[in-house]
Length: 490
Ligand code: BG6
Image (cartoon, rainbow, N blue to C red):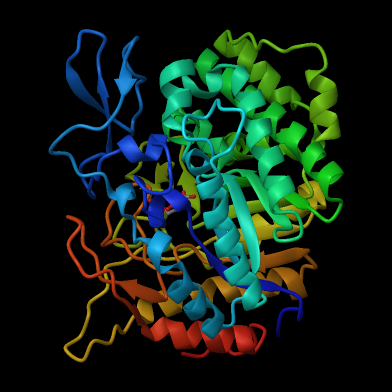
């Protein structure tokens, strides 16, 4: 089987994880720039100064909120991996040429909001920042690679966190609108595919990471997310008005959720868990809050502050497509089980699947289930904008990297994607494996958790030449694209 000729094969990245150039071109700091590197066992930390002037740090996960009056900023002696990333800022021509060599039809990247609006609340954008993305989009167009742009990917301008407490403050809607108006007008004709907020559902768990929110209570989370929903809906409408060619999607972290056994209690729990994903897409695709979430808010004592007109805005700003990340499925049990995580999801160990070195359970069939569930629920085009295996790669004496494990993971997932399209009739726009070039891990800040087809010489302490080299999976993916997904053999 194969996928349609116009299928968008490509790869995905995010500015804070690969762009670097944090102190160049007039860029301001973003929330990601004050988050230290962690490891498999140590959480990444947000650095800040208390109102008493003491320098402190707070784990990103589990996030407890920052003390009142905390001001986030850089501290001496800390290592912040976003500052250099893999230095795409200076390597973009070389990197895009490699993507073109693999035959990419599209490339997903994010615009670093603080590169255009260094504090976040300015009225006029930073021209130098705009020029950088002009150059990147032009370079992509040179090779007929379609840019797929995430507007906000875990990189809220730090000024919005420090001055406003992030997305809890309704004024962020206006700042975001101003930012998006700039993007849609400046890059009209250069960019057609957009997504508003990366993994918006992570706002429920890590609101600082996902939206610069400095407090952490159910009320705060709900209100901040409401502001993002309204902002997203407003800019979807605006984007269509500025250029009717624009396709503007949502982006959620997604995964199939299984009950561990056929005990009805386990199945009910799986249903409950799935609602936690669907809440976000329900609002953004259908344009209103689902009843189950309003009931949940009632139980939690959450009172959403909505302005007159918000309902209408949500209705008028429904997204054109659903982008989602899929790395793993999760399994839940109404009884005790061995806890296991994976891309911010928690659950119990599934005895029928293997897990990655980072404990993320590997389940290609879960991708087919996820595609079918979303398609049946919404009947809107889907886009797999992240998928892949984070693994330690070994550079052999001859410089080669034999990443057969990565090829096996991707093959398993592409096969299921193919079944979803050709057997189940799912409308799938494209596939952009995560970290197509090695980059900094969002969850741990490590470099050694690699996803790429392209190896980057950089380690967890920031050492290395930043030289790029092709892994075995590079030629394999090139062949997959050239055959429209028909030839998956290693
Ligand atoms: C998604 C994010 O959660 O998963 C990416 O959108 C992230 O930013 C990716 O990098 C993989 O997670 P990690 O923790 O392995 O980098």
